[in-house]
Length: 208
Image (cartoon, rainbow, N blue to C red; front, side, top):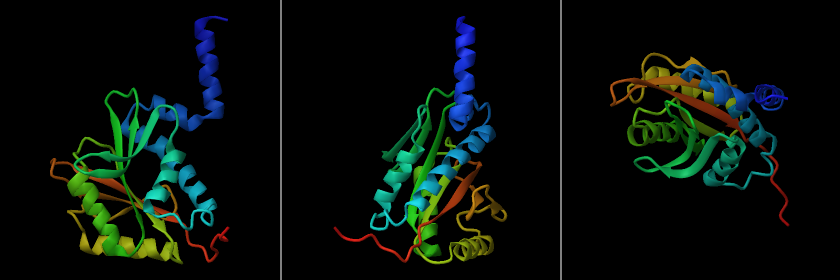
């Protein structure tokens, strides 16, 4: 078997076994990279939700550690508390990409719109330089009715336009999630994904 045949076989194996990994590695535009990353993010959020009883006692840092581990795949460096004008909850960097692709994520246990918008302010006004891709604001929702919570949050943002929000929020591919755009000090409009993670449960793990 020639080197070209071996390489082709490897790519085909990756396409079958880890399509999201291959899509991230081969993304030729920011849009294609975001589409590939969304598939990975949806899987990571779903795993959190499927284990919400087991994670019921974790704080924001603990939940973000689980999320970071779920997002970590070869070629994608995911770190907690990395520095970018402060300690960012989660930093995601695609390795060996030119131009570099880097995403910043602020994560909060949802405690009302004010707390959510505080996270948005940190992300936009403190951590983001303007070189990064779409920012992420993760909502770990431990309250009942995540659908109503996200709807109300979108309505408030569309009415108030916080932090120079440009126009109305838009639908996101992921359930209980949406997108917003904001004028940034770099002179460009930056996009933020607001991602809902349903961790509501009436059950608590038994103490041992």
